[in-house]
Length: 380
Length: 236
Image (cartoon, rainbow over all chains, first blue to last red):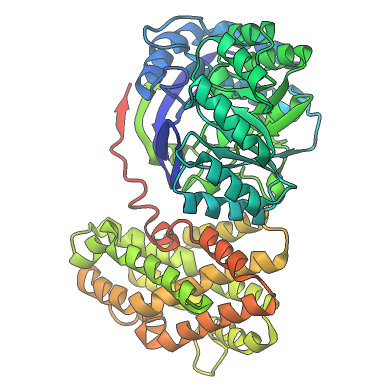
C-alpha cells in the first residue's frame, strides 16, 4: 500500500468560550489536519497542533514542513503492515528527521502525518487501533481544566466540574491571585477531588519554591511545568525544596529530554501529548522509558484539538500502564462543532469509552473540515 | 435577586446577543444574501422539527404542578390540543416549502433526527436524570422565551426581504410576541422544576450556565453562517 495523495487543512474552529493560561488566551482551534489517500482511495486522517511556545511550530511552519518535506518523503513509499505497537516505529521512520531554523522540534507536523498514515493502514487492514495499541482499561477517565480567566470564572468552572462529577481537576496558575484562587477552588471541590496545578512555566525558581510551599496546604497532587523550559538542574533544585510532586510538559518534547530528566531524577511525572511528542510511536517510546524509571504518566492534550487527536490520545491512554491522569476529549464542550460523526467528549465523572471502530475509531466529516479550513492544500 | 429573575436575566442576555449579532442584523437590514435567508430558514426548521419529542421528554419528568402546562404545550405542538390545531412540525414544513426548500426537506428531517440521535448517544455529562432534565428544560424554555420576543420580528424580516407570505410564516406567528404569556409560564415551570427536585440555587444556576455557555440561539440559527464563513484559500 502506497500513499499517493494528501490534503492539508489549516483549521479555525471557534471555541464555545475562551481558554486562558499564563502564556496565552485562545478562542479557536488552530489545528492542522492532513488526510492521506492510498492508490485505491483508502483514507487516513492525522492532526497536529502547533504551539510556538512549546515546539516552536506555527501553522505556517507546519504546513510548510508537511507539504515540502514530510509528504515528498512518504508519497509512493510502501507502508508497513501493522501487527502490534512496535510496527508504529516503522511508520515513524518513514518521516525524515530534519531541523527547521527557529523551531525546537517538528513534532506536531510529525504527529499529524504519522497519525494519518496509521489511520490509513488500519483502514486498509480493516483493523481498529485497539488491535495495535492493546487497551489495559475499558474506560478512560479524564480530568477537567480550570482556565486562568477571572477568579469568578475560575470558581464557576470549578462548580461546573464538580457537578459533572470529575475526580481530577487541574487549575491553571501563574497569576497574581494563585493562593487565594487555589484555596477557593479547593473549598468548592472538597477534599475528595484530586487537584493539580499548571503554571505553564510562569514562575522563577524562587517564586516556585515560595508559592508551592504555600500552596501545599491545598493538597496538590502535582504541579505541572512550574519553571520555563530550561536547565534540568533547576527542576532538581525545586524538587528538593518543595513537597509538591513535579510534572514536566514543555520541558518534555523529545526522547532526549526524557533521558535527561530521568538521569537527573528531576521530576515525578511526565505529561505526554501526542502532538507535542511527535506521534504515537515517539510518545510510546517516552512512556516506556518513564515507566522503567518509575516516573508516572499523564496523557495530556492540546487545547482545542479535534476528535482526531482526542481519539489518538484515548488510544494511548488506554494502552499505557501506570497511568495517573488523562486530559483532553473536550470535543463539543470546547469546540462549537467537532469534525467527526462520533462525539468524543467525555461524560459524567470524566469517563469515556474506548473507540473501537476501524482506524482511530472515528469517522471524519470532510465537509466539516472544508467548512472550517482557512487554507486547503492539495498534494500529489 | 430571585432565582426566577436570575434566569430571566440570563435569557435576556442571550436574546440581546442574538438580535445584536452581525448575522441577525444583516437579515433584518436586508443586506444578507438570498442564500443566507435560505440557510437561516433551514436552520430554524432543523432546530425545531423535533420539538414535540423534546417536550414529551420534559413531560415525562414534569413535577405535578407543571405537568398540566407541559401537557398542553406538547399537545399544542402536536396539533391535537384543539380541533382546529395544526402540528408545529407541519408548520415548519410549510415554512420550508414556502421558502422553496421542498427538495431539501427530506435532508432537513434526517439532520433533525440525527441531532436527537446525537443527544441520546453522547455520554451524559450529569449523573442523574433530574440534572439532564434541567439542562433540557433550560434550553427549551430559553427558546420559548426568545421566540416570544423575536419571532414576530423575524417573520416581518422574512416577509420584507425574502418575500414570504403569511402562510409559510405561520410557525413564527404561533410563537411570536402574542405568546409572551406562554413564555412567562415556561419560566415559572422551570423554577418549579428546580424547587420540586430540590436543587440548590447554586447548582441549578451552574447547570443553566453550562447549558447556555455558548449562545444556543446563534449556534442553532446561524451556525452555518457566522461561525464558519472562512476565506478558504486553496492551493495545489
